[in-house]
Length: 309
Image 1 (cartoon, rainbow, N blue to C red):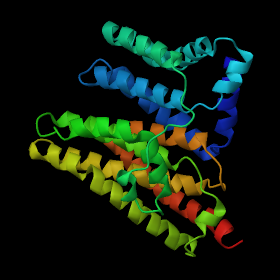
Image 2 (tube, helix red, strand yellow; image 1 turned 30 degrees about the vertical axis):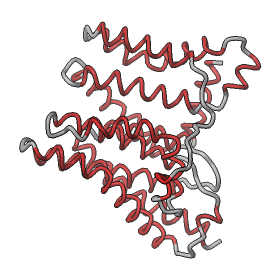
Image 3 (cartoon, rainbow, N blue to C red; image 1 turned 135 degrees about the vertical axis):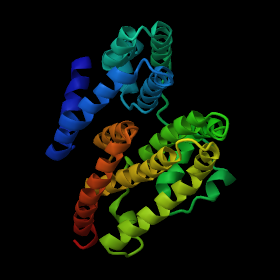
């Protein structure tokens, strides 16, 4: 089963495209590895990296769709989950041990086991309340995303409001909230929803980016304001705020660059997660901005095939 998992990753990589595979393998992954090697023992990265690792595993575990299949062929699929999660997190765990982060490593491993023992939630339930009625119907990605992630969004948003006391609280909140919003765009809508408003491809993209990125900016603006109350590193804080908007633009453009009606892209999730992580290095956020220009042209060409076929 673990060999099949690696085969699925290999097949998924083929759907990313040669350009993005080279971008990941030659540029992004080496930079992420270098960053972890150099900073994993520093404060606050010694705490942020294990939390980030646990969050990613939890996100994957809650959304895996092979649970009932595995339950039908393996008596205790939890053992397989434990093995998978430890194999895929082994490089980071090894780095933590090398940096003498023994307490963090022990807690991280224990939580990974607890996650593996939980039954995955195929459908994350949340009541349709007034909280969702303020989201326009056209922003269906947000309707679905908020139902699935409402509790973690609130959990990560509240500490960020104390950025006036510790500015890194706002930075960590912005990072995880951005990651959750990026995950909203991994499912592609059916073609009839795409063509519902009758706009051409370029106007569709411009309106989509304006509404979604603008709404996201309003949501994270309080975190930015709280962090700006402390007068230190103002340009750095502005840079991270701009990088989060840039990442949401990247996620939306990537969705329509590789759009397929009513499909789900695992490649999209992997690419935007890595893009979010490397944007911690602000010069790399500039690279993401340049990639957005390339994606905008590709997304426009892809949408023309569906809006003018």
